Structure formats: structure tokens, C-alpha cells
Amino acid sequence: MKFGTKSVHAGVEPDPTTGAIMTPIFQTSTYVQSAPGEHKGYEYARTQNPTRTALEKALAEIEYGHAAVCFASGMAATDAVVKLLNPGDEVIASNDLYGGTYRIFTKVFAKYGIKFHFTAMENLEDVESLINDNTKMIWVETPTNPLLNIIDIKAVASLAKSRGITTVVDNTFASPYLQNPMKLGADLVVHSITKYINGHSDVVMGCVITKNAEQEEALRFLQNSCGGVPGPNDCFLVLRGIKTLHIRMQRHAENGRKVAEFLNAHPKVQRVYWPGFESHPNHEIAKEQMNDFGGMISFTLKGDLMEDALNVLSGTHLFALAESLGGVESLIGHPASMTHASIPKEEREKAGLFDTLIRLSVGIEDAEDLIADLEKALMLVKEHVSIGG
Ligand SMILES: Cc1ncc(COP(=O)(O)O)c(C=O)c1O
Image 1: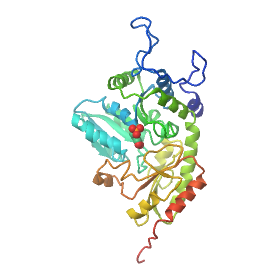
Image 2 (image 1 turned 45 degrees about the vertical axis):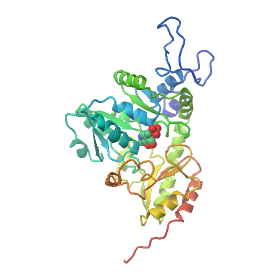
Image 3 (image 1 turned 90 degrees about the horizontal axis):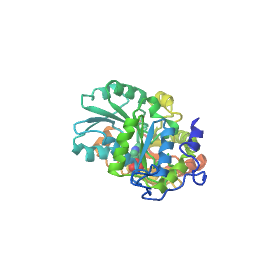
Image 4 (image 1 turned 180 degrees about the vertical axis):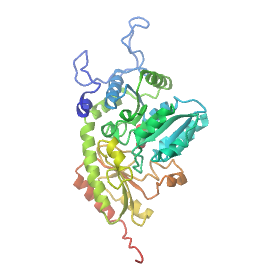
């Protein structure tokens, strides 16, 4: 099956009792047993729920994995993956990554004896130099959030494999439509389903996709033991969202290109971060490992003044100023004070994330309207005439 067909059909069977084409919302906390231990595969709804089962099957199929295990948020999924480790283990993570991931690593798990190293992963030697006998996991986010750097998944995964290290890819920014890390050698894939997979800004959820039964068992144990599970209503909404994932992503990518090109040609814009440009330092890798370049774009303004950035951030109308990404509606955000505020300024700037960076999640509206909205907001930026020359 090709991806579009999978998006529509994956995981979903007509309901055996009624023939309902849509998986019912099994709004129940428990299941009746005919005798102790005699049941239909469902005992208690933290452990199993049929709506969640259908969703997990769909997610495993669209990410080319063995199984998917769902959690109450993207962060709960990340939490479960790190809990696969033991005190003394070390993790190497990309240095440009979602602020909440940085926070859970450094503020939650570091105190339980897990050590985290952060590095730019474009240069494999930087990763290799951090590997030692305790290294158990490499955590990759690509495209990175918010600088849209591209990390070569195949190269990192093959280095990790040669040293017996697990490669985890947070594929939230790309979505399974644009990129399938399992096909490139990753061992585990994490998603904030909240974003593109659900796509309608009305659910918070996460998942981990695994490659084999052993990993699945370990994650199911954590799902049941720690209990951060999503409810059946939310699972139903995500199942519905997945049916249009391919169509939405096509439009996100089409609009992304138009908006990125508009910004790149705008006299008040200093730099546009988008992997679709041939001038992007890792454009060739992006072309190889992604099916398209997506609708996430960051940019800076000439003059690099906070006042100008704030004017643009509150000067759009269609681009709503809000945290998050990946919904059908366009969003504009300020990583330094919003999504990445949990990373210290000094660390942010080391990774190249400056205070005036603006991030866009380009939605699926008509591109002409989105461009007109940005054009209007950019009028609020002062002219910065270069002195001399
Ligand atoms: C790349 C990435 N990973 C993980 C998360 C966390 O997901 P959630 O907000 O669903 O907990 C986010 C949230 O913004 C994200 O952008």
C-alpha cells in the first residue's frame, strides 16, 4: 500500500458487532470477565482500550514499525523512552531540540543518574567523540526545532548500530508523510501526535514506534506501570486526523515553499531557515531522507532588533501567535520566550537560537492570503539602512 492509502485505511477494521466503518469510542474504564481471567483481551482501560489499539496499529503502519505505544502527550512518550535506561547510562542528543525535551533530560532525568551530552550532529565526528562505554542512546531531532537543521539519520544510526547504541528519532517536525526514520535505520521513533499527525490543534498526545516485540514489551510495561495513557475520545480524533495526513502535508509543504520564497526575497528579512533551499547547508541530505521539505520555517530580521520582531509577532492576523505547530491553521511563534524558554539563553545562543528568531508553522490556508498577512506585518519593521559603503 502507498502512503495515502495507508493513511486512510491503516489500523481500522469495521466494528465487528455493528459494521460501523469508524472505530467506536470505547468510553469505558473496565471490561466484564465471564470468569476470573476469562475475557476478550481487554481487562482494564489503562492497560488496553480498543480505540487506542486501532490507533496504535495505524501509527505502526504509517511509520513502518513493528508496533506503536501511545502516551498522554509527546513528553510522556519521551519520558517512557528515557525510562528504558538505567542510572549511569549516557545519552547524546542534538543541541537544537524542543525545549521541553531539553528540560526533561536536564531537570528530571539527570538527577536520577542519567548523563546527557548535547552537540550539533551535522558533523558525525562530534557525535563520535562523545561516545564511551556508558553511551546507550543517541537522540536525534531532525529537522531541528527551531533552526531547521538537518541531521543525516542514516549516518547517525549506522554509527550507533556499530557501537550497540539505540538511535531514537523525534519525527514530530517532519511527520511520517515527510520522513520515515525506521527505514533509515532508527530503532525508536517518537512523535508529539499533538502536531502534524492529529493536525487539528484539538488533542495533546504522543507515541513511540518500535522495531521489535522486545522493545514493544518494555514500552507496554512502562505504559501500564506509569499510566500516562491517552483517553479513547482523543484516540478517535487522532484516527480521524490520520486519514487526511497525506493531503494536509502536501499542502503544508506547498505553502511552506511559497512562504519561504516570499520571505527570502523580502528586503527586511535577514535570513530564512528552511531545508528546501538549495543554499541550506544540508539540503542534499534533506532531499535524500525527506519526501518534501514541510511547512516549518524560521527567520530573522535585518537589524536584529527585538522591537521589530515583537511587532511582527503581534502584527499578523491569520498567523495566530501561539505555541505548538502542525495544525491546519498557521501559527507564528517566538522560540526564545515560548517553546524554548526552558533552555538557558547562553545554551540557546550556542546553538544559534537568537532572541529575534521568529518561527512559522505554515498551515493549509491559501498561500496568497498567508503571504499578504506576513507582508502587512513586515511593514511594521523599521528600514535598516546600512551605514557607509
Ligand atoms: C519536536 C517536539 N517533540 C516533542 C514535543 C512534546 O510534545 P507534547 O507537547 O505533545 O507533549 C514537542 C512539542 O512542542 C515538539 O515540538
